[in-house]
Length: 266
Image (tube, rainbow, N blue to C red; front, side, top):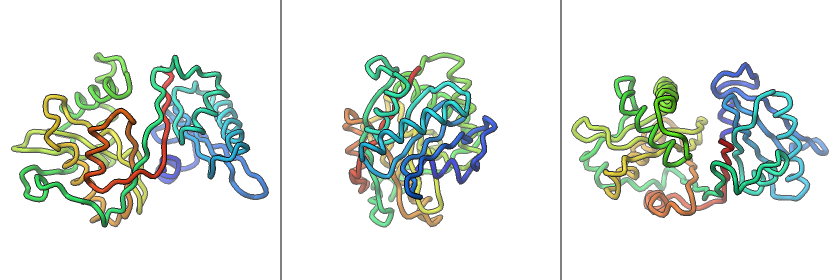
């Protein structure tokens, strides 16, 4: 999903700009067996069509070649977990020492099956696209999300990066906020988006506001907008230990369809 979205939105070119990447594919008998994209931010995104052992080897080969061609350091690995593990061995990454190395649960939802929480259906809370006027709050949300979820180092440098990230999301109209009496309660956005499918990411509620169903309402509001624009399917992933998020997504109608992996090298 991320591979397809980035290629569609930025093209198959790499000048180091957001969403651009160096793409490498492996072909056997005329069929694609593995693709890797070394993205502008250092993340290596990979995908093979199956879990066959030879395709795991192909995944490692295309990752190695993509890194060599891009000339950038590898800062992260993203893809189905077994494929991420295969790529980690290519780069001699000790997963036990990585800043983050977690297999996650992959969920999907047919948007016709979306269940809308009562708080949103009754308009007690409102979900809307984020605007530039929200940036000060959004920067702090992204900062705290990065610290809590990705293990980032807190501080002014991260806050500045978070503001740039949120400004880019707002400019692309792929960020939403849940508000009550004009106060922002939660955020959700897209990690990737295509005309028919979206991948959600960055879902975050301030700790003091949790256990009120706010993230669930934010995601539902975002998906109602997506459905109105012709999107038919949504996917997302979350950690095995994040039981609250699992319950929230399953309450909306999401179902487990596989796994995903994220390794951050610091």
